[in-house]
Amino acid sequence: MKKHILALDEIKKLSDDIVATFPSGIIILRGDLAAGKTTLTKNIVASLGLDDEVTSPTFSLQQCYSDKVFHYDIYNKGIEHFISMGMLEELEKDGLHIVEWGDDKLKEILVDSGFDVLEIYINKIDSDTREYLIREYK
Image (cartoon, rainbow, N blue to C red):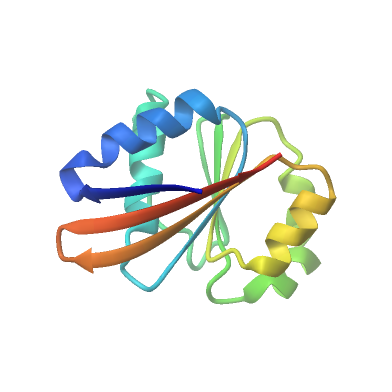
């Protein structure tokens, strides 16, 4: 497991590294409300050279940025709704898939199905600092 403690203005370094080492697959973002899941997603999209406006898909379930990044939020409806809507098939598209609020059940399903998964826990240390715990499953 990799561990990074970064100020908010240092996140670009992390997102650049993620894009360079994990160009496609599924990123599961975990952390409390306001930990910075969407902020990290914005930085990953920018690191890919995209200028799309990144917003949390809390109510729409999915946002797409260009044809490279697919952004999901399963906070409101949960994993069962995500699966029942056929969203697992969406994860087969070529590109980078970022899932906010993924849980152990989703991780197990994806790993067992042969997906490359990067799991990132974001812990808010203070208003400007976050701890990122990163584990890759291939």
